[in-house]
Image 1 (cartoon, rainbow, N blue to C red):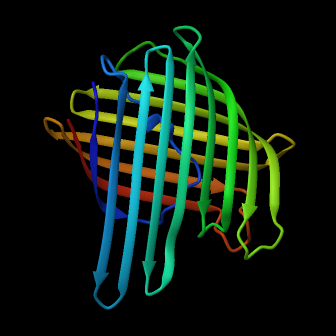
Image 2: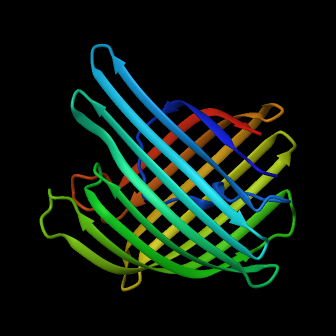
Image 3: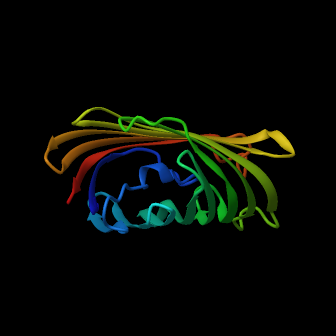
Amino acid sequence: MRYVKLLLILISFKSFAQVVNIETLRKSTDSAKWSGSVSLDISLIKNTNDIFRIANKAHVQYNDKTNLWLFVNDLNFQKVEGNSLVNRGTQHLRYNRKVSDRIKWEAFGQAQYDAISEIDFRGLLGTGPRFKLSENDNYKFYLGTLVMYEYERASDVISDRIQKDIRGSAYLSFSMYPTETISIISTSYYQPKIDAFSDYRLSSNTSLLFEIFKDLAFKTNFNYFYDAFPVSSSIPKTQFELTNGLLYTF
């Protein structure tokens, strides 16, 4: 089945863009090899403050049952009275190759920036196996164990701050469909430095969908992120995001 998604965000709390949850973007394609979605939101609000917001999300996937290519572009910029509250962007390209019914080999590249977290540029290259732990179509579990190279350059606030590290990236993902109208998708990541396990990142993304009518669902999404050693001491170690909205597919 081919999906085109329109997501209307209703509520948003503190946001971030550190780890891309690819599991929420993988689509089963019974007949169509290509699938994806794209959205562009622009807001200009004038009240007691001048508020400007622009957000662009694009996702394109090609899947021929043996090979899967996935591209994600996510840009978000928000400014209030000349001060940037959110200024981030991520581009992610991932390739999966089917090895057996239970094993796939993954490789990915990612580029991102996040002005609020003082990240001028972060580049990632990684590869490793992905294991299918369950055969039940209503309860799917996956385990990924990857190794990645990370290049990180801090913003001008911190001069000459460049890091080049090798990190592990282990994730556990599950998709559950307890009824025909309820879907739960969750992925948790653990990403330590190979030579210093005390320097690690934890993240979790969980989406809960309730079908209202055919092709229309209410969606709640929660992101959690923890970085043991953020770019600077002024950046909180813990960040989170909660969004509610409507999801229309056709």
